[in-house]
Image (tube, rainbow, N blue to C red; front, side, top):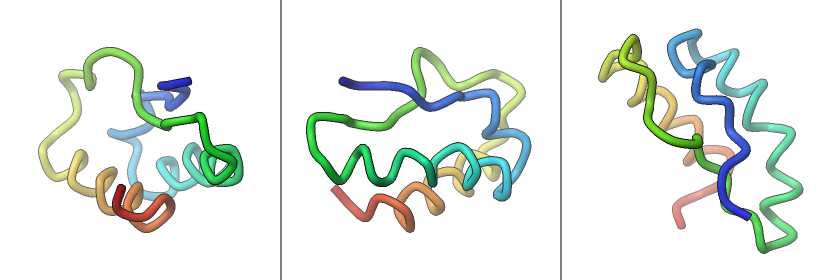
Length: 64
């Protein structure tokens, strides 16, 4: 399965991103699940906000 990440939390900041991604950690560790936002990143997301998302994603899931 691919997806399952609410893309609308990205502009809300690091705490919201962590709250969205952390519960998916165990599921991703089992295998067969790739967490990622569905479709496009919202246009109200700045480059800096997306960089925060990427940093938090790498902290939680590691580099793949």
